[in-house]
Amino acid sequence: MIKEPTYIQLQTKNLSVGYTTSGKKIPIVDNIHIDIHKPTFVAILGKNGAGKSTLLRTLAQLQPALSGTIHINQKIVKNSSNDEAKLISVVLTEVEKGHQFNVYEMVAFGRSVYTNWIDQLTVQDKMMIENAMKWTGIQHLRHQKVAELSDGQRQKVLVARALAQDTPIILLDEPTVHLDVHHAMEMFHLFRKWVDEHQKILILTTHEIGLATQLSDEIWIIDQGKILQEPTVKILENNTIDQFFNTELIHFNKMIHTFEYIKTK
Image (cartoon, rainbow, N blue to C red; front, side, top):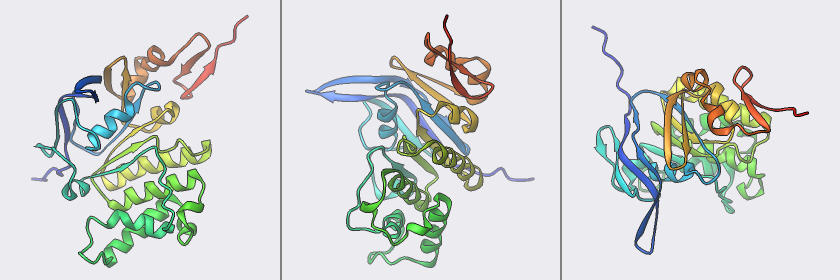
């Protein structure tokens, strides 16, 4: 009998995310039920302020849930720790300057959760660093100071650091926000290949709806405090993008995965 492969599992139960102000809980998104048990590329969509980043930060344990629980491999995740850093890597929207470090050093930080007490890199660590830089196309920048890079280049460095960390779960907040169209497309293709070839769970927030509908496995749409979670194929079949993002001036053409301007007389 062929044994089925065992993958990482990410689940939430009755999760509510938001903020606490003056002791009062202010929910942004309620009743979030996530159940991922195989390699999956997820794109979280929603208008500005809908709660995309809040959900991602909560999953990453960077801010507490208002209620409910997060489970990895059926164990409740309670707080950030070195063990969790071996399970989840995160890239946020804020681009770190990293003034004193060069690109290689910044990417190498992704291996810090595995190195010994003197932070000595093993041959395996070095291979992971080189591979991450190759995948993101930044090998030629290895000796350059991170502070001297453009925002887009720094974003690629941070993505490379997350890939070098080699966690089964990768969370990315607007990873292409500083990239032009060409490099945004390259980055989405990188994510698709990374999930498939390395068997990862990758969840990102994005406004790149066209790329998300072409390359993701699942789309989660956050709107008015609720979350809709469907396979991307079903999202397209049901014209769901139209329901949330169309206006009197534009509509989403699912055949070419882009918004079109509606000509008026």
